[in-house]
Length: 167
Image 1 (spheres, rainbow, N blue to C red):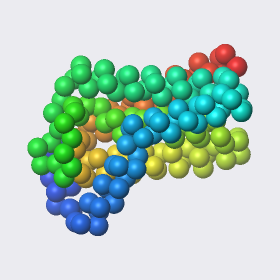
Image 2 (image 1 turned 135 degrees about the vertical axis):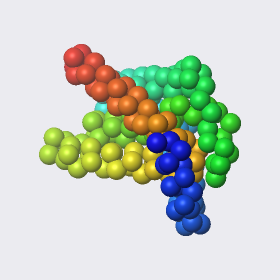
Image 3 (image 1 turned 45 degrees about the horizontal axis):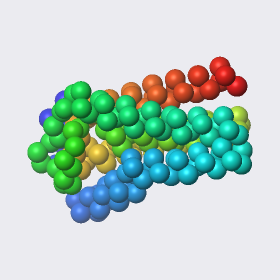
Image 4 (image 1 turned 90 degrees about the vertical axis):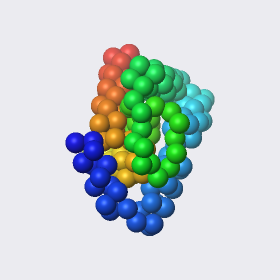
């Protein structure tokens, strides 16, 4: 499955899609999202709700730690035919994991009940686009991206459940 997906991405390679994918990779880099998340956390903590600020910051920090630990535990190498060099391990996709958590928290904290479906659909679409670009750039195997979706969803759901229990 991983090899077939990798070969498919190679067969559809074109300069426009490569440029788009590289822009997404840089703009939605895990470190960039983590920094933005901490700024949002500070805003929430100081201006909206201490609990919401702590939820956002803690969840992002846990996500970063989970990505780092998972990569060290699995030590899976990236595809050799990458379009964008990356020296770290592949499993799970950090871009996908943090995107699921970051945009999921945005949807949870900043949308009212009436707009939740649209917000969650948008979150899923963003995460799917990021996942596709990671596979397209061949910096991840399909299973790395799937693992990122699973890990991100588990962290997001667990954080929301804990938050709701203590609110």
